[in-house]
Length: 291
Image 1 (tube, one colour):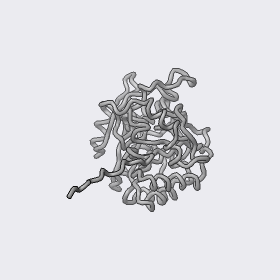
Image 2 (cartoon, one colour):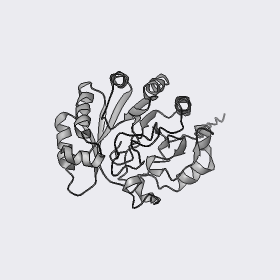
Image 3 (cartoon, one colour):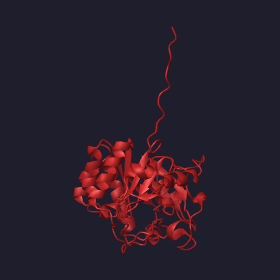
Image 4 (cartoon, rainbow, N blue to C red):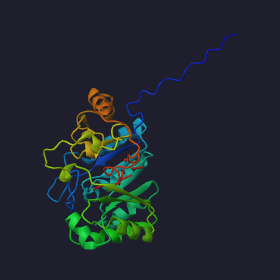
């Protein structure tokens, strides 16, 4: 008797290999960092995506089997949809990371963050308050961020911090030492990337070398207007829009395939697949924070 063993069917999911999705809830931010890759700031809008639109994206993420969502911006805590969306993500059995500048966390948000399956990420620039504030463009931002880092640690909420080295004598090593003395264990340092305000000019299209190699291959990003691309650094590689096309169909489309094939996959010095700040200091459970 001959026994034939059939090979398992190949994984044909359009999300095969994708580990997390960066959901940019808003373009608005209290700060105006000199190197911000998304050009966020106080005068930028929340975008066209509604709470219902974002809930639909989360539902698609769960259906596709992608395990993690990252809420980012802009500053996601400025979005009125953040708290209910955290609940929606957890209700679908996914993990969620909120990438915030931590300058202002209202009581109701602390309660939402203080749940199993939720983690927090932030950016930090210097142990010197004047130097930190000059980078963020927000007077007093250093004190508020540092106080809320301490509160996140006190509450035992999983935390990761990214340091972006802009050069010019920035006190990066001292900042890292300060954070470790407070008890922060997950810290990454990255160089600034020539995207957004850090680009030579606003019309500059980023070179593929500015990307970490995980975008399109291991993560997806959705903009405040619903545009889909590989990560917040690759906004120039738009592949569709979730307000008109389901996320699954965007990921199955030729534009996504073309963009994915044009990005070399994961160099050895790339950020981890669970970061989403914008690489090498932002790490989602999609890179190392950079903004």
